[in-house]
Image 1 (tube, rainbow, N blue to C red):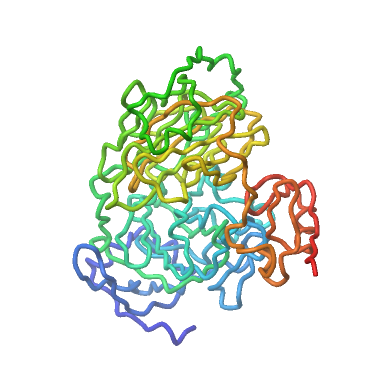
Image 2 (spheres, rainbow, N blue to C red):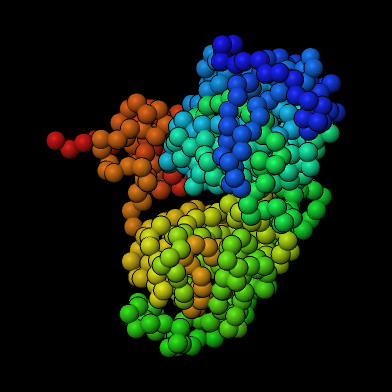
Length: 523
């Protein structure tokens, strides 16, 4: 390793001042060495950015993973630069071996992606020395378990960036703001609120879709190279949540609301002719109940129109466009939504999901810029994206059955189960407008009338029931069906081990595993 790093002359005093002098004394006993020079392409203009410097007697050692404090599923190589989660989707929290420096970019390469999970890499910082943390006390998840404790800050990387080969860099500035960039893209504000007056260690949770990462050489980038294009003038809410703030941390017992509380006399009316096109109108029931509206709480960049039945994108940057239903869903009712307006020149699709959080307990400022960060909250949140191409006039149907399965249909064709939820508590539905989807309309609901018969569940990464590897061991062939969801993604050996785990759930849909059934190929 030593041959990869060259000594860098000390900077002039003006350059030293940018390194947050208050931190240098604390780091003196634990760091040594220096980093090679490299250049970065910034989005303003081409600039050559300096490597981590030596300030007098201070030098910086290579950034590695902490050798001892790590999750139970983490396997680390001898260089302490490569880690892999050996099984499951969690218990894979890792830390850096030394404190980081303000503006030091922690650079990670995603080496392995496992498509059967949801969620991705969690990144952040901690003021707790990992050497003083007992590995046996580490929770399963960085979010929300660790971030609910003092001295830990982390957030989930958007799933679309968690692809094999992507290089993710993240860092903290002197104001406690955390930024990230993907490959050569512009810097983006991730979250804020980190306390920089004390030493900070990097926190990396190899979660969900992300199964393996490699630490690359970290680099120190001057602040003038790091101005994010879209965020310099925008004040973002802090990621840190005060656990005493009841407006943000809604107890599930507080949501134990009776159905009568939300009952509005349902009126049955014909489908408005101006809300449909003739191509798909025959796909709907002749009569729909019209008691469902969008909730008055909404993101500031979306507008609610037409008696709270239409949600329209009002901001070109599509940053905060969450809308909720006005009441919880009813079991087996189908909610019909029409794509009123789409744009062929824009990319992206409609996101949707369910939550146990009553939107009436939230404020508009509580709604995040990245809706996927909602899954880090203490309430239940599940978010998906419509996987089929959408265009103006398309009709989507959403239905939650008594088993908690959320099923989706598109223009009358069943797409199948999308996510599984706990339907023993009230569940509100929400939508996120972005990309090509610029306006949607709530057409109404059909009680106890599923939008389509559920299709057999399919493993996203499996093209057929035979001839594919187990999604846990990647060695044996898939030969086992999980009961009762029906997914085939495991070998029998891994299925037995998974079934014995506490709170065992399917790797695909997260439903509880009642049993596993070995299958045999017919000859």
